[in-house]
Image (cartoon, rainbow, N blue to C red; front, side, top):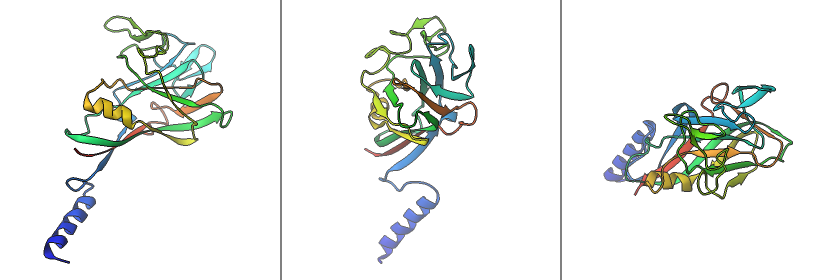
Length: 215
């Protein structure tokens, strides 16, 4: 091996040992729910709550779990400022913790990119209530083309971790073509999809994994 090739190999090994990618090579980063700047669990059965994760007894809601029945939804946004400038996103995946599905293999997970800004006080009726109430175009963020994109990505959730390819969405946000308002996850069939809550045992299990490389 020539001296130049040996030096290059040593640099690559050193960068790998430090957890860095050599110049010109792809790098993968992980952003978890602990870094998320917007989250909500909304339900038509609790139309003014931002944290309607599960109904433990009739009329009493908590977020010990995040349960998706029809007419409920989870909203989550991850910031993208960890991606340096002048990069090209080659792959992006959202990883969600699925604890239980009933009936097995029946309910599907619907994933849509949100189009409308949402924030403090978000709930089934409103996309924000501060500094003033602003309604969704359709309650539950169901306005196609206004609240959310029309066509969902539909997956069979897998107990453990379900991986959602969101490369196109992250590319659009990172490039500045559209603003990042995060995603909406819902169950529009029947049955139950139970997920780990970012507030309890699921903390750190909601992840956005992004691979990028220099343009």
